[in-house]
Image (cartoon, one colour):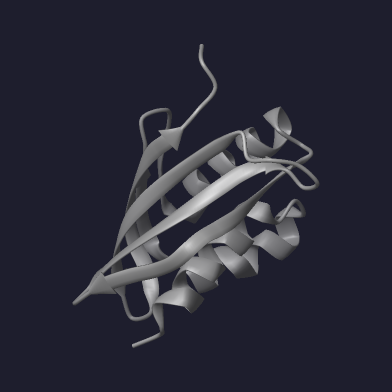
Length: 120
């Protein structure tokens, strides 16, 4: 089984990649073809669905970057990791924790939770 830090790192790399052609390879490395993603704000399925979510986030927050917070943990086919999202040279604006199901070293499903978000 691929180690948890690599799985979480592949996930973060896919969300940070702005070039669609380069992101395609990262999506294949991070997610199974039938990936299902959901969080309180959005949801998507398959590589095309995830790519559309990433495009939307990057269009709205073009100068922001994701990074891992702490160390991923998990057991069996489950992984839990936390992330931050904010300007590359500043403090995080959003933070969250994602729970995933792993299949063959890639994420098959992800459920995301927001731990910190700006007041609406």
